[in-house]
Structures are given as structure tokens and as C-alpha cells.
Image (cartoon, rainbow over all chains, first blue to last red; front, side, top):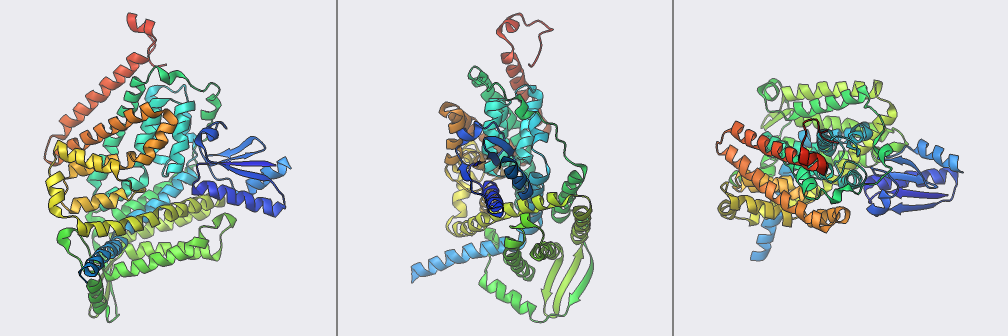
Length: 79
Length: 493
């Protein structure tokens, strides 16, 4: 599974990353998680607010911090 | 030996400033402001504002909406950059994007409240009003100058700015009560500052404690330094506790409410109560004065608790608390360090230097304010204690406003960031206009301070803005319509 976290590197983006890792650990899954901090690359995902969470190429959430339960549901959908 | 003494004096200046600052200024304005900022980030859906920033939004909607987005959506730079890029490349274009960029640092809730609390409501209001007018003007001017190259928009982005999310009623009410909490703690009207009852706690030795505080933190009010009172010392202690407990209590709130969460919320409420009450230490004990402020704060907190527990979903509360704590964690340490250094610098700078350079409202003084703002970089909000220092050292309020307008807008870091998104030429043109308008803002405000007529200045500003809007409207018409200029020509597309 390919997970991208979009954001220039602020605390909110780190929180999304932290929550994502927690969910992955809870589900005992491995995934390719990467942070994307370059603003030009972020814009290519067609979002107007960060942080953004992209799972397998699909923008799941942008402009807010998703709740752990939401992230869990999205990851399970992709599994 | 001499050097050691001088160093000690500097250190004492820094610590004294920090202690006085923590004890007196921060709490009743900054603590509620952090929570308001948190509530805005967590409870206002971004789409409720950005839907007015799409490519097809008419100009009279997109410019004010960009300013609104600047003040409610963007308290930290990590939101400003992507939103700026988004509005520019995929949305309403260069003009509104620039308006957003200019307005955001000057008019977000934290900056305004902090300026108002520390320096004065008049300066906060001038900062808000002049940034609004000049933010929109600079946006329009940039759109005019670069009108040809502003056409290359991303094609399929309409859905990005669609969406029809409306803010929940309960969330709005919650936000309004937070604002009431802020106002009841900071407004300086007799109803709130009068004291209505007094209780004396029989604690002995507090007068000696006050004497001790005055000895370790000596102050000189002629240089704008303040000492620390017993109440201040209690508040500093409480703040430390809040910081310690909230680290886990609020930082890990996404995993649910724990005992620590409640403990830190309780402590924050207690801190606000202590800050709102009046206290006087004397030989027999400690007088506690029940001020109007205290009643206002208690009332707002009771309302907040009711709404938070009954009307708002628990998920929203968690987001709200997490975002508020994030602001505190991110900004407060910077402020502490900044205020410490301001205290040190205050010992070095002589009043005469500032008075000679910017003691009066001159063009040179305003330019000096702007230049200092451009070349010095202070992290978020630290510009306010710096400005306060200049004020107490004798700077005129006009140049002070010029400095306050320029500093958060322009720094090497932000210029680099902007030029990465809109190109170097445009970025420097933007810098030029900001510097010019900040100087003008300082001159205007300084003239007002010196007794010029408010209405004539407002009239000039309006005429200037109308001319700009007219120019933009005329330029944006297709060339054919421009040459015939028929009355039924469609206005803004």
C-alpha cells in the first residue's frame, strides 16, 4: 500500500503521520509511507489545503487532520 | 569583573522582562486567543470560505473572501503557503491570492488580540483596517500589472472550490462565547474593571515575598519595565503546571479524554480565574478582589462547559483542544525566547537613538520602521513585544504601525517562498508595494495620532480604492468592449 502525506512540514502534518503509523501498527500492516513537502508536488494532487492524506493515489482527506477511526476505515478499504 | 557585571545586568533585563510579561500581559488575552484560534481551525470547515475563491467568482466576492480567508483560516504559515498557492494557481488568481497573503499575518485573531492587549486597541484596529484596505489594493494593483500573464489557469479545478459545507450552529455559538471570554477579560471598561467584593486570606509573609520579588526583578518604569507582583508569581507557577500536564493531557487527546485532560483543563480555568481576579498583598494577608472581569470570565466558562459537553460532538471537542494546544506549543516557546531577548536588547538601546530616528511622524521615521521590519526576521507574534519595546523607548505610533505592517509581511524567508510560487519578478514588485503601503499606513496613522481629521483621510482612502477598482474593471473587459464601451457591456466576468 502506498500512503503519501502532503504538507510543508508543520505540526499538523506530523500529527497525520503519527496517527497513520499508529493505525498501521494497530492493524499490523506494512505500507510505503512518505511525506511530500515540496509545494509544487503537493499542488499536483489538486488540493487547496494541507495536510493531505493520499492512499493508493486517492486523495482521502485534505485541509484537516483526519481522526484515527477514519484513517483506519480508509486503510481497510484499500487492503 | 566589569564585563561580568554588564552581562549580569543584561541577563537580569531579559529575565525581568520575561517574568513581567508572563505575569501581566499574556494570560487574559493570549490564552483565550489561542483557544479561539484552535476553535477556528477545528470548527470552521475550510470549504465554507474557499468556495468563494473559485476561478469563476466575481471580483467583488473574491477579494473580500480572500481577506476573510486570511483572517479565519490561516493562523500558521503551514496553512498560508498551500492556500496561497491554491488560490493563485487553481482559484481566483493573482489578485485575491496576494490579498490573502497580505491580510493573513496582520489580521489573524492571535496577532490582533495580542497587539490590542499589549500595545492598545487603537493600534490593533488601525492594523486591521489599514491592512484590509491595503491588502485589497495591493492585490488589485498586482492583478493590474500582471494582467496578461494571469490568464494561464489550471483548467479542471472547479470542483476544488465547490462544496457547500456550512458551519454548524453550535460550533458558531461556541466560538462566539470564546470571543466573549476574551472580551470580558481584556476590555477596559469600568463595569469589568470595578471590584464588587473583597475577601482577605490570612496569609502572613506575603509583603516580604513582594519585597523579595522587587529585589530580584528590579524595574524602572521610565524605561517601560514592569515588576512582578505576588499574583504574577502565582500565575507563572500555574502556567508551568499547565504546560507540564497539558503535554500529555492535551497533546494525546486524539486517543480520548483521560484524567490528565481534565486536570489540564481544570488548571487552565483556574489560571484564568486567578488572572481575572484582583489581588493585593499586604502585611496581614492577601486581598482578593472580585472584579467584574472575574464574573465575566466565570460566566463565559460555565457557558463554554455546557456547550462543550452537551451540544458539540465529542470529536469536535477533541479536534478543538488538539488544535488549541498545538498553537500554544508552537507559538508560546518562541514568544518566551523572543521576550527574553527583547528584555536584553532594551537594556542596550538608548532612548535617544529611537527618539532621534522615529520619535516623530516623518517620512524618514516611517521608512526606518519599514526597513527594520524587512531586514529583521522575528517568528510569529514576536514582532508585537518588539514593537512594545520601541514604543516604551519613545517611538511615535505612526512609524510603529509602519513597522508592525511590514515586519510580518516581509522577511527574506517569506520573499523566497512567494517567489517560488509566483516568480521572482512578481515577488519583488509585491515587496515594493508592501514597503510603500506600509510607509503610507504609518504616515496616515501617525497623522491621525497628531490630530488630523479622520473623515477626510477615510474619504481619500475610499477614492483611491474606487479608482483602483475602476481600473481593474476596465482592464478586465475584452479589448473590443473596451473600445466601444457600450453601456450594456457585461461588467466583471
